[in-house]
Image 1 (cartoon, one colour):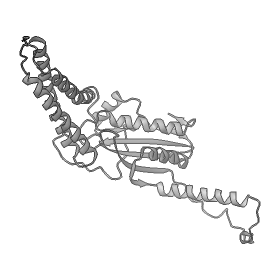
Image 2 (cartoon, rainbow, N blue to C red):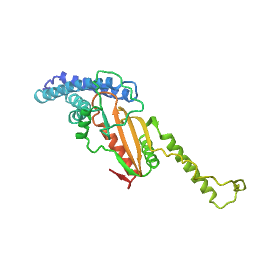
Image 3 (tube, rainbow, N blue to C red):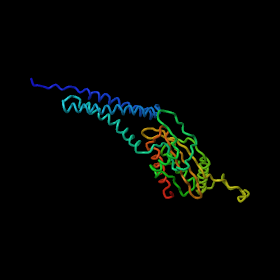
Image 4 (cartoon, rainbow, N blue to C red):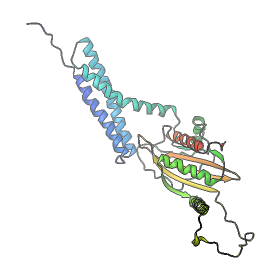
Length: 303
């Protein structure tokens, strides 16, 4: 009979695959439950951190399994490789988040106006948790924002506030944000709707067809000179709520429009609700929104 050497079974390799499955499942379940609104963000972060610790342990077990395979010929190569892959699936995203946590400033509130940031219409509800939370509007935090995100600035557009508001509403609809509160928007929207209705009526009457029901009726000429003109709103403030696409992290957004002579200035503010660090998400939100707004109002943007 041919001699067949006995190959021992690597216990470390077997446990690397078992614990790797558990760590990956734990991280995915925490992410899915948070995305569905069942698990709050601090608890989801705690579960993902626990999964990361297990993934580091799994990484060590898989290395032991590869070592035993190379030196002793122990069984467990496939199990070690499976554990390694599952550990990396957990550790790579966590590592990216950790690098942003270290490299980016510890702030959770970003505004285009660092001197006088717009005030929230409805202050976001902050729930106390194990994650430390400080005042995001203090001067030290604003100084950190200037150094990290110098490109996050307001926009000045050559145009009336109602035109800029239409572009803002269009970009908001594309991003599917939920409106929370507003000030001064109803008057502007009513004026836009009346203008649209008048334009529609003029199109109907200019078709050339005679409508007896719309025959002109002689009326006394109105005294236009002595009638007060309706004041056009020059200020609007809108607050929205949204979530990040993948992680589902809640964000609050504030947009302020101020008309000055023949231009309209747009300021924005964005903040996360948990923890002291937003991992750069708020600055990215403001930059993306203002870039899309510049595209819609192409040709009338200024500094």
